[in-house]
Figure (cartoon, helix red, strand yellow):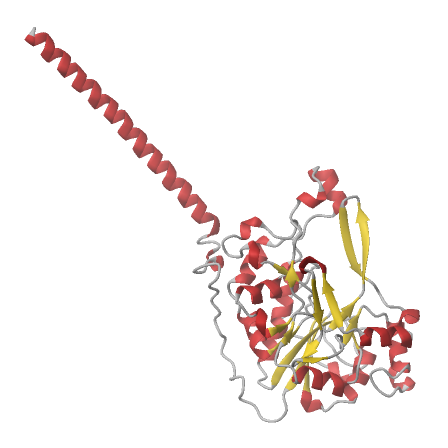
Length: 389
């Protein structure tokens, strides 16, 4: 009986060791599998995307490039006019007249055009634009990260001049609504940037893969056409944390028809991120700089909506000769507030706590409409022979 009990105990011990060994192998296998999964997940963002990583979603590191201190200049502060052009500047005759009535010591001009394009006597009517193009321009595609890359290049170039204290981003179809003196005082007298920024409630723009780098609570939308003080221009130029996230994860969606035919998905279900309508707004929100902004743009745009079933598409309206009549321009210049539907907010236009008209510039203007502004002496005294030269 004793021998039988011993044999049974030995068999039980052997079975227990076998079971423990099996469990131990399972634990080891599971641990290895988890390690592999964790490694693959890290590889998704690092090291190939290590530029995306920073300490936390609310801690954005900014590396300042070497440049002159902000206050290291003599004379009056300058306004840097930053033009984003497809190629040439079709309204150069209007802007040339605008700058002729200004002290050349009070402004700078920078143009981002297609790579290799040169502004000289053969490509522009105004000497103000001669050789003002960036030498390191990039090929720009609408709605892509290349657009904000071009903007950043403009800010970087303009920041090299310590006298540049205000930075105005303009398209090649923008026009001034006032003379230089009015615009100069308006911008220099304000200690704030003018950045159109509001909460975006549409699901199609924000990419969930931006977490944890950009939380949805910090996601903002607004007009591309911003005006920055020097401090905020430096933030945009020196950003090494948010721009890589946009470049990788903020992608323009395919055309609606293509999405129906090729992807067989509803258009509103696809991510369709337009970088230039979100980048600066989100960056400044991430850094907690909103209180230093006038949350509006100084560039007026009229928007028209077209619908494709459930998808709405907004397009800027072009001003033609008939649209630039004096009563229309007077109405635009008289606007003193902007309503933001997603925030149920009316932004009353202020400059250094004083109520002022909202807009200094407007877009999109045709050449004929710009000519009418000249003839109506909106920006300066009109000399037809100069404009048509």
